[in-house]
Length: 237
Ligand SMILES: O=P(O)(O)O[C@H]1O[C@H](CO)[C@@H](O)[C@H]1O
Ligand SMILES: O=c1cc[nH]c(=O)[nH]1
Image (cartoon, rainbow, N blue to C red; front, side, top):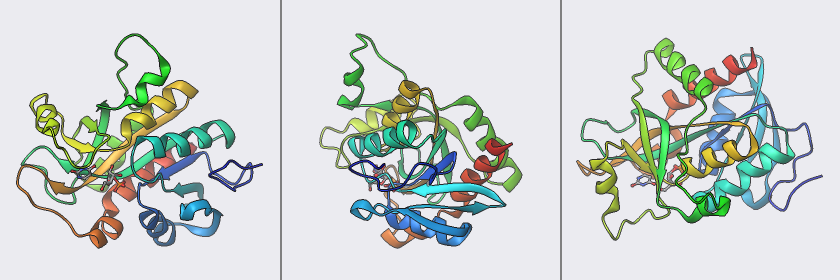
């Protein structure tokens, strides 16, 4: 088997997949936290790994950037590889001054400006939300690890560069941070009857203007990674 974007065989992916946007963050997570590591996909350099974390099979594969990209990878994992849980471990731009660089937020919901949702022709506004069990497991894991993790709305934007100043309109609606994938992931989970959660580390703050380097975005978001891995363990029970 295989898809145009994934050369893994059935059974190569674990029940839970951590999904960063960045393929090198995926490699970092796999090499830092997993044992018995196997590279199961490398089509387009989008590394997918499966290994063990605390004895539990876990996979990590990058989504690439944006909703069309995560739309493809997550849909194929849910429908072709029997994956049950996808946890996005992303970076995001804070829309609140009090969110420090490197801090972690969980997306209870994901607003969007994207045409991605139009494919369902619902004739109304769909509210993309996280799976409650994954979210609760993440909240519990963050507490156990002593990591503060505000829970609330994300804004998934089709554009990184915000010509019309929409980010700040979403800020006015209490949205915590902007990123580019969570809403499509939540839609795919809803459409396929699977589970999804997006947790993000703050890579830049759009209010204060602070930002992290590309290397930091790749290698330093270990609190978020540990929370997601602990969720994978909880979901194995
Ligand atoms: O760091 P990742 O997970 O890729 O997430 C964020 O970073 C990218 C933009 O720089 C977008 O994919 C956005 O969602
Ligand atoms: O999508 C993103 C990610 C980080 N920072 C932003 O401004 N946008």
